[in-house]
Amino acid sequence: MAKVSAKEQGAMSAAGVFKAIDNVLKKPGCGCSGSLDYMEQSSWLLFLRYYYSDIQRWLYAA
Image (cartoon, rainbow, N blue to C red; front, side, top):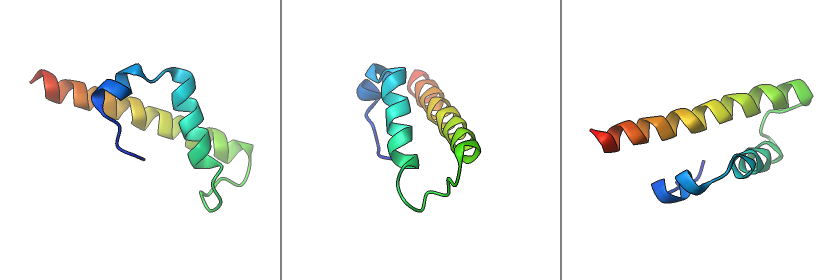
């Protein structure tokens, strides 16, 4: 995943996050062979994206 500044990360909408995930998962060799793989991978990436933003927020608050 490309590094995104905190300002850009806060401004990124949910639609933008899903579009970024789609772009990653549509690349050849990503490991998604069907719709179930796509759903699993996209939910995992979405979780990691928001978890990372929470960690960044906690670090900046400390």
